[in-house]
Length: 183
Image (cartoon, rainbow, N blue to C red; front, top):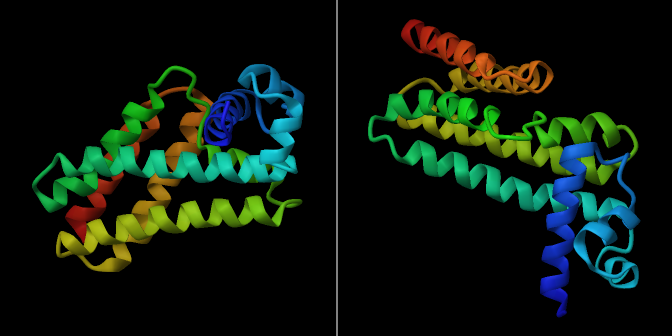
């Protein structure tokens, strides 16, 4: 197995395990077993577990933001695009195995002890907020509305992860609609 294939298999296994069970509950041997990549190769690719966690979060970030953008792009009206973010969150919250936001979860586990993980989490959240800002300004709305919309989305993610329901996305969408009507 070449390095690129081994890396993808390791990341696939890490993503399933880290997201499903939590980063600290999963050891490199668990990733080895689930990926079929030898422990020696796994450590050649990721000399420390922290590097594997950061790579998992980076790859998940690309996928997550790509899926969100694709959904939002399906709407022509710029204001509807803003609300489409919350519609997409509702679909995401309904996915089998949804356990909340991977970045919030990773930060809760490792943010205080791993500057690299904390940096990756901040990068993801900064990119998401910038995306919302672009949507807001593209709709001709004042950029300062992005902050409250970001907080509504983030609050929905946390609440959905805890409650295991999609209701927080609908409630956040209603609040976003009210905010846009007032703004």
